[in-house]
Amino acid sequence: FGVGEHHRTDFVGSAPSVVLAAAAQATTNIRLTSAVTVLGSDDPVRVWEQFATLDQFSGGRAEIIAGRGSYTESFPLFGYDLADYADLFREKLDLLLRIRAQNPITWNGRFRPALDTADVGPRAMQEELPIWVGVGGTPASAISTGRLGLPMAMALLLGPITYHQQTIDLYREAAQQAGHDPATLRTSINLHGYVGRTSQDARDTMYPYFAEGMMANNHQRGRGFAIPRAAFQAQTSPNAGLVVGSPQEVIEKLLAYHELYGLDRALIQIGFGGMPQKDVLKAIELLGTEVAPAVRREVGSRKEQAA
Image (cartoon, rainbow, N blue to C red):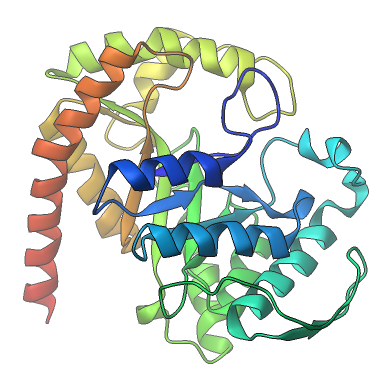
């Protein structure tokens, strides 16, 4: 279960760790992650403290997906210059990883006051709290993530199912060159979708809200983007990115993603654009009771056959 981070009144997730803390108290098994933590405009010390605390009282279920962020409103809000967008992320990711690896910590950087044998607590319950890097498709991001040997969460809004082929190839090649075994590195696809009783029901339910969400809150730095019904339909086809349809259709699409990329996980955003809760809950129930068990069985079978 992932919670995104946005700092504007048309989103609720300005404090993902707080939302995830509430989810931790209401659940026992689900892993809880940010999706993503906009690390460039945050303080890695506070990010670590919040998610290590979450890890402690969730019984070791916390994760972080750190990213640059596809929305940029947090940078001026917290006093950062967008000209430093990439450098901020690189430096702060370095600090976050250093905090995870050692305590106390001595560290010096450009954008944050230095740390001198600082005691950063609490420590996580997990031996190593997972820190993923969210990657939208920039080759440099895939390469740097691979070099660090970190798990990679690929984001796909619209486009062909093969959109991230270069991303995954560059990531694994960079990992191998840096001495990491690509077979041990986890990858995920994070995308939009909806599960309905039938293919038509799923598309009819999702389209008007998805179109509204794209117009109001798309990832083009504040410019509305209209998506006609025909274009939406095309994006739900077997060779396109959206995961929309009947349970069987969604199963087949997720297995196609797995076969293409060798993924460990898929995170599906359901309800974008203000979809009513009752429709979101129906899709979650189908995802949990029909889709996920079938995908897990098939992926497990494929792994056994490969072994």
